[in-house]
Length: 108
Image 1 (cartoon, rainbow, N blue to C red):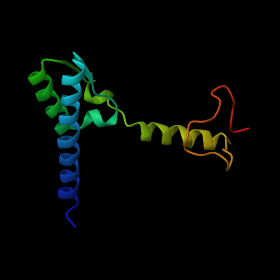
Image 2 (image 1 turned 120 degrees about the horizontal axis):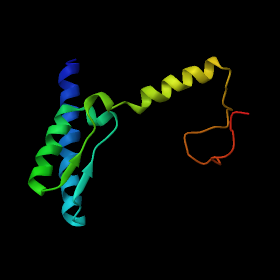
Image 3 (image 1 turned 135 degrees about the vertical axis):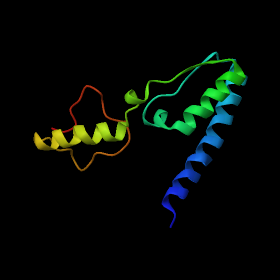
Image 4 (image 1 turned 180 degrees about the vertical axis):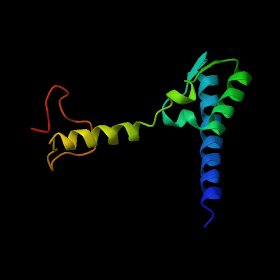
């Protein structure tokens, strides 16, 4: 299996789907500013395609420097490790839906 080719093809498919839809949204809403942030903002192919779109549509594009494009999953995993080491454990009733009261500690 050509993993590098697969990854590049997936990246290209995402960018060639995402950027035209964003461009259409910019045209429909008359947006003047676009922001790309998070781990995905580190993708050089996406950054270049967004810069091209911003020039074509005359919109301001805001992207953080590469060193600030952190991956949220890595940060969450890191925090989970420290919570585990501290003895914090979730209940088996927890799920991936944001339904808990923000003021309630669900790990008690």
